[in-house]
Amino acid sequence: MFNAAIRQWRTPLAIFTSLTLLASCSGSADKDRAQALLDSATQAFDSGNYILALSITDSLKRSYPSQIDIRRKALHLTTRATEGLTLHRLETADSLLATLGVKGDSLQKLIRYVKNPIEGYYVGINAKDGGIVGSNGIQARLTPNGNFYLISSLKSKAVKSTSVTVACDGASASTSTVAYDGERNDRSMGAEVITYMGAECDSLGHFIQLHYSQPMTLTFNGSTSYSMPLPQAQAQEIATLYEYSTTMRRAKVASLEKEKLTRALDIARAQAAKTYVEPSDDEK
Image (cartoon, rainbow, N blue to C red; front, side, top):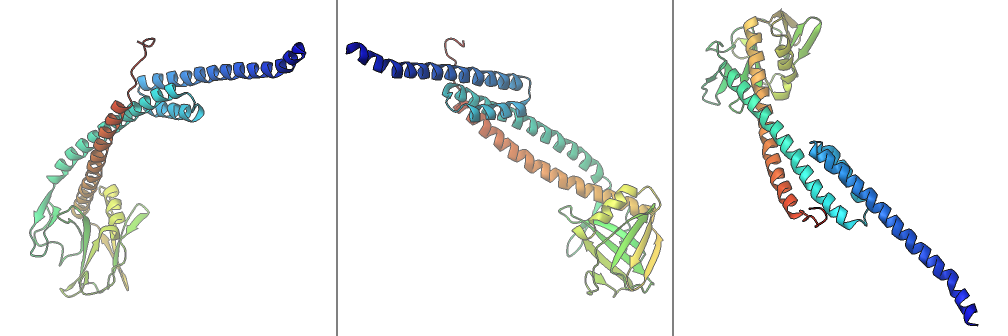
């Protein structure tokens, strides 16, 4: 009877023992695989490939949730890789900002400030003191904040203009249409004078910057049209002011990016300090 009882328990016991051994082997295999991933991530980090290190540690944390000790080390490595990546991006932003600063300083020598009772503005250093009003052509200006805009002037031609187009080698760009309103589109001074702001003239400014050294044709568009060669001096001034405005805008964006990355770096360093894992005696 005793032997029969032993036989009844032997089979379940064997199954339990097998499952325990299987789980132990499986856990050991998972640990080895998790450690291998951590080693790969560490190698990527040491070589400066922070994006790869972050990708591997993310895979490790998702694939082996039960490997607590290894996951702790992976978490610390993640914060260090984030710190390294952020520092690299900060250095890039800082370098770009310095480059834009030098370029901006150089371009600033080619413009001058004009006082005005309503709002002062910048023009090319060789622009006529009286501005373009009363003559034919277009003039670039910058607001005190560095925003680019254009003034078109057409004298002694009844075009009733609402926009302008510049063409070069079969390509062209135009301003937006500014309807006659007696203010931004004014015809009261013996000339048709239109002010184009921001997006209304951005594509035209960019086009002239690309082609300023080539012959270009300026066309005033309205109820009829009138075309003339775009004077080289006007093209050069427009290109200079457009480039200066673009450079200042990029510098502002780069400055904001630098500030954001500086804050992110401080956070990453704090997290790296918090997640540090003291190495065990075997690892020392």
